[in-house]
Amino acid sequence: MSERTLRVLVVDDNESVRRSICQLLKTQPDLEVICEATDGADALRKAREHLPDVVLLDVTMPNMDGLEVARVLKQEFPSMDVLIVSQHDSRGFRWAALAAGVSGYVVKSDAARDLIPELRKLQRARLSA
Image 1 (tube, rainbow, N blue to C red):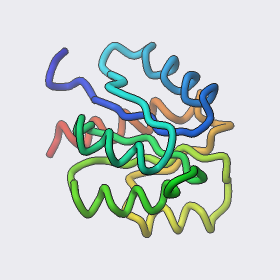
Image 2: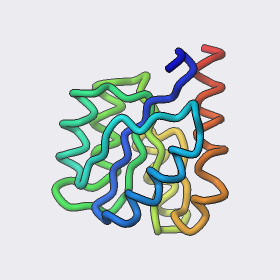
Image 3: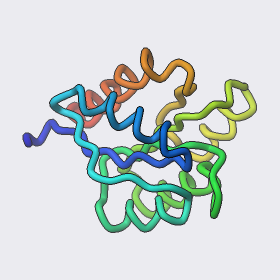
Image 4: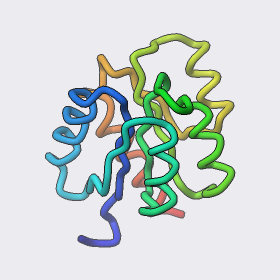
């Protein structure tokens, strides 16, 4: 693992979605899934324990929604990137996510095409910082 490896926490309450995202990320040698979480409270625990570079968050989850998790994470860990991966494809959700401090927003139906490029943007920004 090099210092260019992006360490990722994947958070989604749907196991098949979580598994699909992890499989997609594992195709990239410089993206490492360090852990997974099943709800908002679990996401906060795992983020605090593992300190990932990026947290991929669903919006609609039990025990704290993704937007609230994003707000808490950005307050506690300003340099941690949060990327929303959601089924909701609406301006309202996108604006709410941006207001919560997220670094980007990917619609689940477009994740196979858009997720890796969004992570690459975050990775480039980290390397140039």
